[in-house]
Image (tube, rainbow, N blue to C red):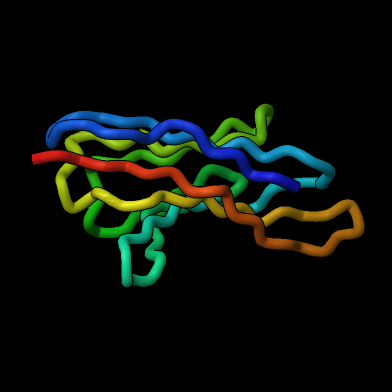
Length: 119
């Protein structure tokens, strides 16, 4: 199973970006799909999460600005980021909990994508 991320880049404060995370490979289902972010020297923190049924959860710092969504037909999760702030600058990673055909669940990470917000 591979998670391939796209999107990200450089944007001015107040701008918007959209991240995508597409899962490919052999699996029965994808449970939660999450977005994390990490800055140098710090731990990777949860930004937003979405269950297979569409229930969402957000970090307080992004509530009202970021929206997580998913398209189960494309095995893809999205993170729409609006009203970006310089403190949103980080490497963003997607994570998926994948159900294997055998029934076991496994965690996979995307390759990470840099988001830089200039002031």
